[in-house]
Each structure stands twice: as structure tokens, then as C-alpha cells.
Length: 175
Image (cartoon, rainbow, N blue to C red):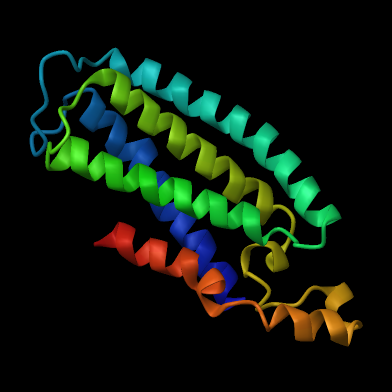
């Protein structure tokens, strides 16, 4: 349950950033992040529409991916890995574009980062609703796995990095 709590906490910290702080940055209302004048307060509505679009596309695409991975016996682990990678990429791009301005900040990039954040969030929300075994990367066995010793043994032979990726992503996002 501790891993499930860490995953849910990471999702909550991420949502507090991209629903609270990121719209203010895009609207050019944050004094700590000076952006060009092309960013205006009405950018918030466009940003939230792209986030919603990312949520919808993410639910559809990752729901189908989850169905496929369940049929092939891989479980839900690949879906969470995709979500963690997309979310880490979005946070890295936001940091490079908005905070450090290594990449020239333009509204289209900010909206595409919002789309990526919505896409990744939909995967976390979709998988969290499936139970603790979906988000704990097999460290918390499901009810069916406790009665099937071969699945438990096979589950613990997966590489440890696939189980620790959400925690590493959380640490990278915090620093």
C-alpha cells in the first residue's frame, strides 16, 4: 500500500502543478517566470481545452493499450510506464521552455505540453481505478495472484527498474 500511496501522492503533486501553477505561468501572471507578451490571460482557456483533449485521447488510446496488454499477459505495467514517461517528458519540456527558456516559449508549445500532461494524467486515473495492483507494478499482488504461485514468481522476476520508474519520476519532478 505504501507504493500505491506514493503513486497517488505523485499524481496529486503533479495535478497541483498543472492545474494551479502552470495556467498562471501560461497566462503570464507569474512574476517569477517572465514570458513574451504573446502569452495572455485568455491563454488559460485554450490551455485547459488542450488538457481536456489530452485526457480524452489518453483514455481512448491507453484504454485500448491496457486491453491489449491484459490479453497478452503483460498486465497494466506498460500503460503506467508510458504514462510516467510522457509525464516526465512534459515536465522536462516545461522546465526547459518556461523556466530556463532554453527553447523559445511560444503558446503553441505551452498548449502541447498541456496536452501531454492531460494524456499522462488520464493513464494514471484510469489505472488507479483498476486497483492497487495496477499502480504498484506488481509489488502488491492482486487477489488472483495470491492463489497462483507461478504468477507471483513470474511477477517478481521483472526488472526492478520497471517497478521504481514512478518513484524516480516523482523525485525528478520534485527537484
